[in-house]
Image 1 (cartoon, rainbow, N blue to C red):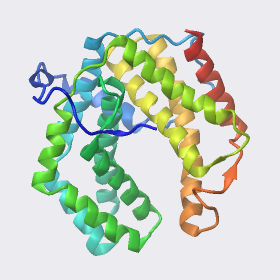
Image 2 (cartoon, rainbow, N blue to C red; image 1 turned 180 degrees about the vertical axis):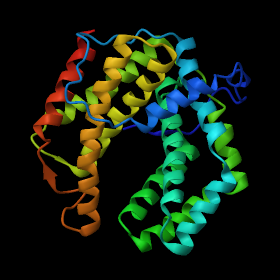
Image 3 (cartoon, rainbow, N blue to C red; image 1 turned 60 degrees about the horizontal axis):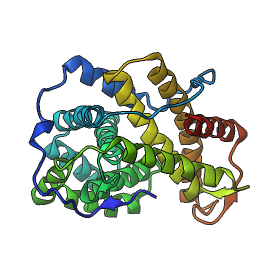
Amino acid sequence: MTTPASGHRNTAPNSSLDEPRFSAEQCDTLFAAVLAHDEIDLNATLPDAIHLDYTPEQLTQCYRICRQLWKDGVDRKTLVGIVEKIYRQRALSAEDQLQFNHVRARFKHLRFAYVACDERHRYPRVFHWLTATMGYLQDAVRNRQNAAMGHLAIRARLFLTRLVFNLIVNEIDRFQPSTPSAFQAYVHRQLGFLQLHLAKHKITSKEFHEMRKVISRQVALYDNLKVLYPSPCHHSISRYLSTINGLMGALHDELIAKKFEKTQDYYADAFEIPEEIRHRLTVLTSRYFKA
């Protein structure tokens, strides 16, 4: 649904992304929100309509804080060390696993910010490949899939070589903010994708995962908005999205386990979306298109 970006008409890094720096308090608050992106509050509600009238400056600020959070919290050499431990030991200590999860959270959040706020609304290609590989590796570690851990660790290590990692940094520095109309069209496409799948009686695990990624991207967006532009509206939307994300994430963890156990085909076997998730997704899409 969201493809990596292969090129950009502006070939120079955007030097305006570095300054002014956000405060440590703002970054800490954002990261706490990122880590709580799937907290469930079954009483969370939405405003009657969800508006999307954000300026290019606001979208730039949303991206800048995610980029600062990533640059300040990701150390290539440390990440290489964790990946090499996975390759050698086929396991991680609780401390290393927590660090790996936190680093990956920063990667995912920056990737979501780029696709939402950049003018192309596409993932930076190599950055996306590394982020996805880290996700597969995380699943393999969690489900003790030794063979998968080995080849995924090799792939991650390749992306973490100095040359490739420098390409990744270059990619994320080529951000250009979206226009308001393009941003609105992007969000409506995302929500339209959800409606398309909600219309089906049953979906596959893969389709469910693609639906959840739409929600995860929206959670990330509102994490930024509620930190930079706090309002009751942003906070209530964030809480509602986090609840959906948590419900969908718990179910997807079960689907991944069934995939590794070979008890359910991730790409072919279909199931009905649980009503507690379907209802919330239906309410969400109706509020966006009501605006």
